[in-house]
Length: 108
Image (cartoon, rainbow, N blue to C red; front, side, top):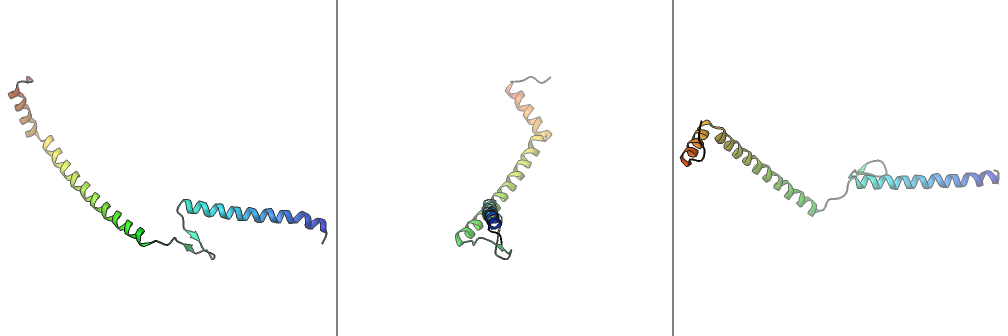
């Protein structure tokens, strides 16, 4: 081979190789940053190992979430009952009678 050709091609091969490694590192960093699973040597997904503390924390958060959902459900039920009472015509009549007793407002 011609020495001049080798000297021309070698830097090109090095640049392509470095660009490939830099691209691989950047892709891996973005996948880690955004929570995507990493790929192993043969393309299989490599998930991070979970320790017992993380599993316990997920269980506690799941229980707390269920409790909060139940509490929100009961608050919605109570609010619906209050809305029924307030929109009931008997409530308005009682409220008007009380205003007349207080003498604060004249009814037309």
